[in-house]
Image (tube, rainbow, N blue to C red; front, side, top):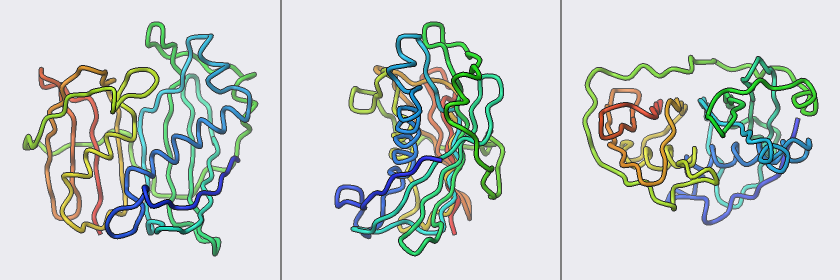
Length: 235
């Protein structure tokens, strides 16, 4: 297990003084990388070998969002490695020891020279160690979208949205999708399914479907192919 303490900063909150939704995947993404660095298998190890861990899906369950100036503990640990896949849990614990957010993610060990899966070697994943799988209501990776999705916007992917691989940063999809949620909606679960990489220069067509208890936002290319889908469950 790897953990870090975070104080919720002014720049991390919205007008309600609660942590913005997209900060959750940012925190979890960052702590995953920090864990890899601490284990000696981070970017300095992976990059010369043309390897990277690419995210394929998130599920984030929210009991409550932390608020401005609150100090929380963010934790992560892998609970399984299978072939090219790594399975990780995450949680956020408040000062009273209560779990307020829990999550899991599926990562793909990838040869970025040809964008093909690369088998994780025992000498690599053994450096992390394994912990118990977190108890939560695990949903399938694939998000089943409604048949009718209305186009609500378009986004040109610029350097602002990109990560070090010149792909759209994983957290930015949640950031953009959050703009199309109902006003003052209380989100209790976020799911994201990453199907195709989005690169600098790509134009994404954003489609939405609003149901009674959830909102779907998906990202399509000019040809109508879906790249990333999101589902926000509303209390």
